Length: 413
Ligand SMILES: Cc1ncc(COP(=O)(O)O)c(C=O)c1O
Image 1: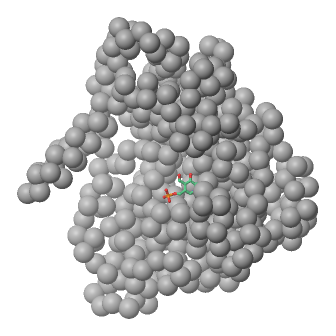
Image 2: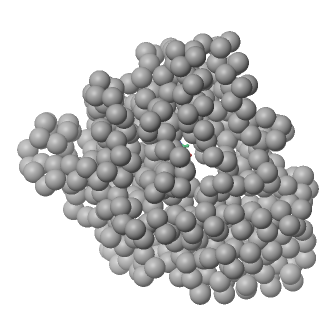
């Protein structure tokens, strides 16, 4: 079990312990969050946080790196094995910094890049105007069609018009399988490099439950803390030695300074866990749970973006279904201890702070032991609450149901 901490700084102690209580008492449906194992937590909170070591194993700018070298090399070897790749960089502080480094490794500044639009489910770092990717590059976006699906013919014709040097595939909020082979064909037709950002689906890809982009993409980036269930951070992988050298350069000294060795250790432990058969079982359950959760909403006539889910998440059009904004739905659910995030949806009419949708994911609650039965129950609770949000007595009753469920499934750590 995770446990309360005790430190001299009582203000921080209190905030951390309150956060533990919040995590224990709330049902966590944010698709990008998870609960790490106690081993990952211990490694992340270890003395490795004290160590500086700019550079790479056996090529550091600091002395005393013999132990952190072991940690980083183990992380690299495990990651290579997990995704069956030749080269890996594990120093990325976050998903955003690895995307910055990967793009810089692939194309010169100012190049044309083409990524998935934000309201279609893409990420800020895939070319959004207020992000580095839209500021330092000539960025364009492709969108999903009216059914919320990637239309590969449309993307091809857009790519032919734009002639990007780099195409980015991968998403933050897309519930269907991504066809990396089709993206490769498009990239080849227009002579573009191809990068896959598998931040969300990495855990599924690692165990073969989502097709791997490795054969098709020049570079793969990911976060380590979503379905992969590791310490927070980023990773970059490739099979191309020349590109691998450029990636290492762009991570350090390009975009980052000293590696966060405690985070790298937390990643290494997570990769060790992900290589075990139990991790595949976990991912299978994540998928089963997402499917039944989504199907139950569909039975209740809830509008699901892209029609269904083939991965760990899906989006609900709360505006169309409940006449609520994403912001309102998030607040209502928060009041009964269910945590979700508001999300823009295709053809969004509200601002990103308001939105018409919410995104739901199963990785975190699957870690806590939720199975199909609990997700069916949860879909009904969410439906009842969003349909009757003015009925305070009902909301109180539902909150008690939620708390009962969280007590039955504590975070094991
Ligand atoms: C697809 C994708 N890429 C990159 C990121 C950025 O990760 P980070 O928040 O660690 O910078 C995210 C985060 O949600 C993401 O969903």
